[in-house]
Image (cartoon, rainbow, N blue to C red; front, side):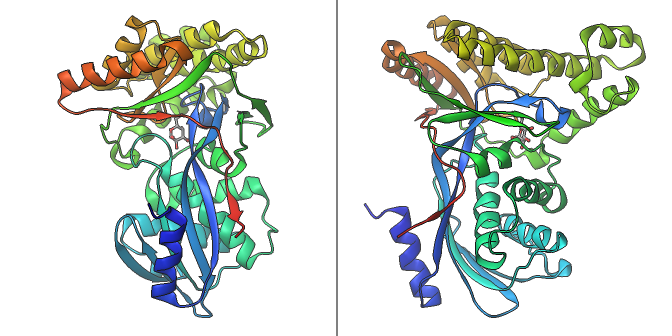
Length: 381
Ligand code: GLA
């Protein structure tokens, strides 16, 4: 089978003649710490072996010409604010160009062809992979790599905010830019301090079960969740919920809506869970890691209300089968569960989850074994 790289190169040459340079960036998983990033809390992601790859070459013009292999669509746009394309996938690339320019960086016209194997709408951050791939590439091609890696992640995040309508936190872009093979990363989203955690448990595997229920954060109540958190933080006189305690929350319970109360309750609990998981990992205590994952699922489903029937079902199946840990992953409203599974239960779990899900919902979930991999990079030939 033709590899993604070969396909990109072939189409680039057909469309644009000479060769360009290849770049890639990755989707991500998150072990624990959901909806904590925009609350100044901790997250625990890692990049995975599913990527967006692009071949890019400056074209000496003032416009960008780009072809998406997967969508089979060609778009051209200029580099001024009023040149924003209407195609949603192209807006990610346009946003990256504009956010670099807004920061005083340079972007000139270029040609690009890209493709990917990060499943769309599965909660694996295909959009962050696309943003980080182009941010990394344009830093290399036009800015001599003078933009630091955190700024590259922020350029992706601002693209979401300003061009794609998602008021997201920094986790996905951070993971996509900073990802390192075999390592998860714990990021403190307030201080932006981070630490790599080698993750290679001998007896366990991480498995994603994709319900194939599509979510689009843009039209989902994601932004509303964030607003709830910000309202409660403000009411508590805090910048973010990072510093909130359950006692403080309970003290203002009668002044806020029940909905806001439960959103904040989840976030406060989740902050503690990430730290507990780090300690447990250091001690090799995967039972505790798994227990915390189930608690997160419960909170995301009941208090934060970002799960859905299909994902709750997958979580129940995992629990019934004695899977060590399982929870909905990412922004929610569809997508995957992430499961920490003992190696000897792996095949049985997958078989059972696929069969039972199919019986109930009439389609099979997709299964992905997680391989923790590198993030944004240039692909040397
Ligand atoms: C999406 C957002 C992230 C983060 C997660 C939930 O993936 O892009 O910033 O908030 O949801 O943890």
